[in-house]
Length: 448
Length: 190
Image (cartoon, rainbow over the protein chains, first blue to last red):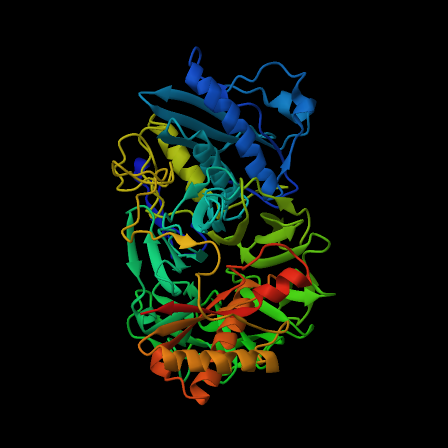
């Protein structure tokens, strides 16, 4: 949270410690938040600048994407069939009585123009009952990506509802869409959180898998068999660099995860051959692979590490015997190793919810011979099943705000990526594109 | 519901109000710390807005630059090998009597072919998660390594690796395909 609350334009800069209540503002300034997702929000069509054809096109996309983004976080949107009869919206002087008449409590006005290749979006929120301004922002970006501006607008609106929006977040995944007969090509891809804009990251025509975002959204660590052995690389996707994880050189890395502060990497490691190989153990090193430290030293196979939101604990999979993997938790120094999965004989692939308010771990469980995504509530010890009857599902990953889950399911021979809320309601298959699409990792929006 | 608050949301509204006051709406608002305001002329080295940064010329991979580490085509399936695969039961890394027989013959082959090395590639059928199968394939390759070294093949000529379920020998679901895919393959070099 920003520590400084800016009011300096009128020379009245106030400041408050992070997270603390702010002092009351000057008289006459309205203050609103959207409390709860039951607030009825009207999102009328984006208004393009008169005669601005590119803006008119962009507006279509913006309205559609913005509404979808808000619905995704369960904001209640006033149906447009209710306000079709209203007189045309005057964006600079809305008639709030009109919007009251259709039950809107918040009015979202968007105006766009395209100037010199730049798309500008004015975003204004009004409290309908009073007409007060709740938010006014001007957002700008390259004109060829109106979706991004819509996502940004959505995140701004969601912030008023105290939701850390994920509309600009991205999902990394593995796709074999580039594969030609006789040549394997499982490449790392990235897409927007809603499945739009899939882009290829790796181009090595090998097996690449298990993408894992750095917490700042600037890099993706992934395992590649490009040399024939599984090695851990980090692709700095905005810089075009690709670095190798130093600690992987003496053996094989089979799973990995960045710590929440991005400084360390937990990984499952097995030496190249001979003594100690065969049963993987969990190690932690600096994010570049220097200073490796071994955390587990059992004859069991330990793999699939995932960090708690504080970085103080690591969950992982331990197979004391084959065909009986279970979810364990330990301190990030390797102490206090203990089993946490309580039901089922076969549990693997833990993913710790990154939001501190949800103390829960998603994982994959073998149930009735199939594979299903489930969530373990660490506070209560209770488990809830997320998927059912969709074929085999695995590889759950949380949205950065912890409110949604993505995973992949195989149905009739095709793997696709699906998204649901954290309770498992309303599972949607993402329009991911051709080929088998697997192993999603939901990362943050890139920070600058 | 909408709540009119006394403290929490003043930051946003105060900024807007301040801007209105100086008739500079949308042009002169100072950015809140830690929350860069994007706008024309905002310099930035990368552009998460378009998502993919600046692309060096010559790249053929959308807007992502080509990676520094080049590619070698990997065959879809196993490399040809003079040594037969050994197969496993479902959810098992234990060597069957048939597997041990095959490995005894393989040990003789290693004796006749000094200097040749083998990478023992552990594979699994498609059932189960990616991490589980990587672990299982690793255990299968280790089981073969242990047996071969116990009957005299020098460990220095062997390495182990798991592909989990990522590179099946045959496609398709059902026991016929699964049985072929549960294997250790001998990738020969040298």
